[in-house]
Length: 127
Image (cartoon, rainbow, N blue to C red; front, side, top):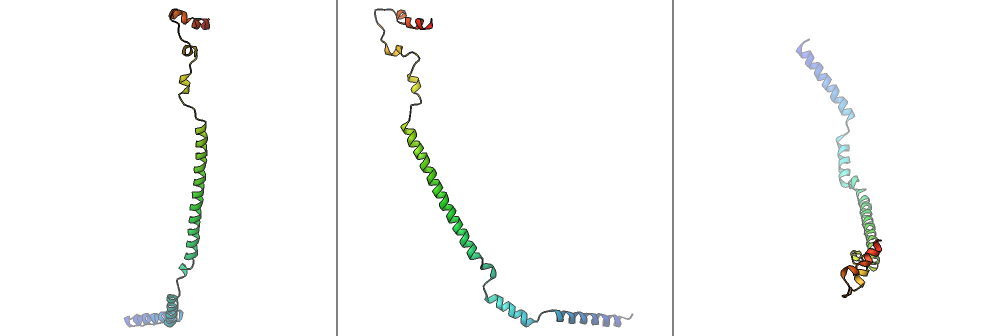
């Protein structure tokens, strides 16, 4: 094999490959026309964006209104319960004012008897 014949073979193979590529490749004019037509029409990805954004905004607004109404309903219920609780209020320390034997607080000791005689009712109850 001589270097000249190898070069001729390589040149022939490259020419065949070039011819094959030219047959399969689209023409420049057609490619250019497609590019120009795509640049003048609006992008396809933006066509669905507006309706989706509108639906999302409506969903957010509807959710916010629902949360606000639910919160108002919850606020009115505790207010009603609080007003009912205030009308039925009792002092938490009222039990301290009552005693097991209220006669000590309602009776007045007599001065002519001794203190031990006044406490005789305690011993009667214990027996």
